[in-house]
Amino acid sequence: MTPTTDTKEQIISVAERLFAERGFAGTTLRSVVSEAGVNLAAVHYHFGSKEELFRAVVVRLARPIVERELTLLEELRQEHEVPSIEAILTALLKPNLEILAQDKETLVIRAQFMGRCRTEPEPIQSIAAKEFAASTEAFLDMLQRVLPEQSRSQLYWKFDLVIAALIRVQAEAGQPFALLRGIEPADVETATEQLVKFLAPGMRS
Image (tube, rainbow, N blue to C red; front, side, top):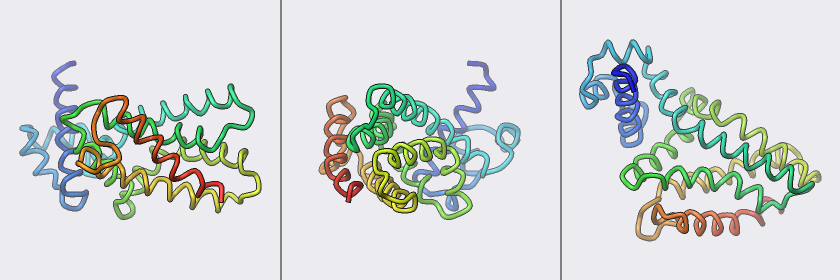
């Protein structure tokens, strides 16, 4: 990495932790500057505003998740004319849990931020929603194929409840009684299976 890239990544990493701990409203650019060990001009140069800094944190987190989700969906399309609800939910949930389990040191921070980025008040929540929009529409399209008797609005609010359950699991990741307790592949598999088992009947009903 170049020094400029290093500085940018350092700012994003510090911002992710502060946004996770304090939320968007409770995080100031000055606090980011202070903890990142950079000057305010560097933040303005790379991001321009606090909103754009928040977007940069979301983008760094969301894009690998969305890419993985869309890859898994495409595999389902190729392998099954009509995939099961369980397979679709697994393609949605597993990438979101896998990214938490990549690094034990950042597990709690990343989990907290993922919860924050989907629950911040408007217009901040829309920043996160935009980054996940492609996968959201792709999953709704797939669910519409599998559950043609349900309206798009029915599927949307059910999908929203799935995301709400995911956020709760993310927010509690690493705690003693959490569904996702650790960072081993087996932890992710178990958490995904249990979550899918719980949510699939609701999607069908």
